[in-house]
Length: 213
Image (cartoon, rainbow, N blue to C red; front, side):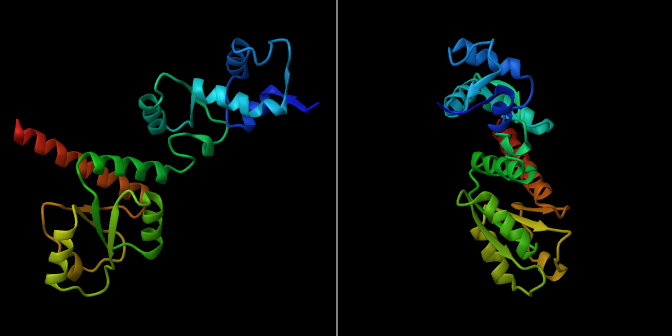
């Protein structure tokens, strides 16, 4: 016979916080357990998790995650995640969530290539790790001299060019990048970078829509 544990402990372990009675009601309705029993067999963990995931979407306390969860729920009820790492929107990382929104905005605007001028090796790696293979990224070191010809080639290659202002970025480099597809990010963090690019892309879509109407 398998070991059992408190239902509340099992709920927390598989990512669900909040009121355990609300979660228990789902199990009772499905015939997995009864309301009289505070404990449940550990061997039912996968069955419980599958049932919970069909009924609820886990979300942390961040306002932007709760807003995103509403559109991602697809009929599921929002449930409090026991730890931020269980949040289905950010996975415990606000930067990861911001990058995901940036990528979605870029895809909606038909942007698949982004050129980043400035930044650091650490921030470039974080950016690449965050977006994976969903977009192509070209990074330009902001303190190394670049020719007009090279900058023009970068602009032609990219769908959007981002000048990462607060990072190491010489004017002799940034001044080469002048084009409607160029935007400037005024913050150093990767989350702020992603939000700024998302806003730039959204603004571009709005202007295109207005000009077509």
